[in-house]
Length: 87
Image (cartoon, rainbow, N blue to C red; front, side, top):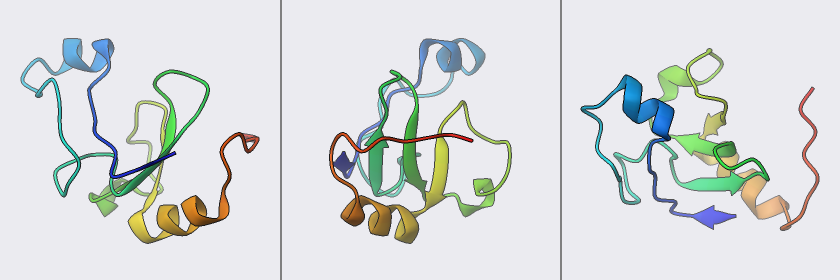
């Protein structure tokens, strides 16, 4: 669980998009938004996004993107180790 996450593209993302930066610090340009819940899989997270056009579309590399206000609420209700079921 991270408030103000930083972001690094996966190796596959870097291969597809070599112009992308290797690192983005927390803030408005960060694709993970304001909060991130890291799952047990290395590159999968439930996180916010500043780009709300991505919500509800097939636009991720496996993550579940939420509006920043929704991930902030979920973050406040969740404890580390909470089981996540994807259906």
